[in-house]
Length: 267
Image 1: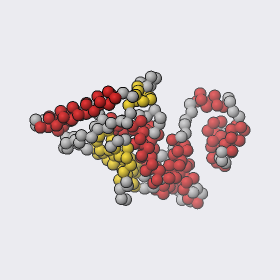
Image 2 (image 1 turned 180 degrees about the horizontal axis):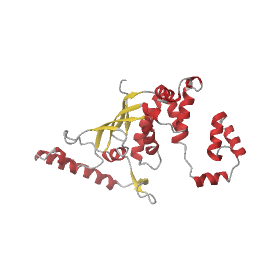
Image 3 (image 1 turned 180 degrees about the vertical axis):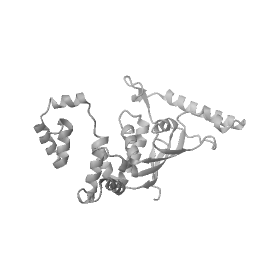
Image 4 (image 1 turned 45 degrees about the horizontal axis):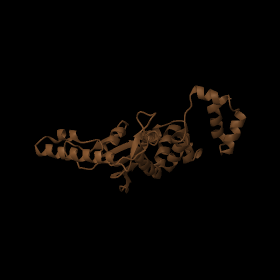
């Protein structure tokens, strides 16, 4: 495929879809190998994909792969690469002289009072922005001076800050990509990486709309419950009331039966 347009992210970053292997049809094709001949006469593609997603049959989703070209600050990339199921190739600071491109936020955020690793609200402080820009300038000047003195690129880069931009190629299968998005689209994820996750979600949704619809329904906007939480709900609602509520929302047939059994068990 031809590379898609780049989606701008933050002040200087982007996400660009380079290549895709497979689509909704590839998921269905892989699933029908497992389910045997005749499956396609029973379920439509959308229903089959939804069944796979509901029941966490993940291997058919691994048959679809996306490859992205990303430009992001180093501190975002370090969070990103904690997802270790992808194939990655990043610009090398050993081979190349790194560009003086730094992420400068439109606004600073305050340290969250309750979440030790989070932030909240805006912090209006012009001195904070001046301090950031001064640190960037001095760090890059030191980097250039070290290079001029003959210090190896692999060592000179040590002085560069984490808001320096880098670029990388990232190839991921759809199952693990969905897991990445579940974590990085969450409200508690750092704001900067959420912006990249939103750009990736936009590109993925366009190529696998059926899988995306089921993913939104059962995973992204769904939730799992503990044994204690299930017990509490069973004490508050009857199967009859729950069935009535589910029916009013459009569930019927086997889907309705599955939903009832999820809360109350077979019966």
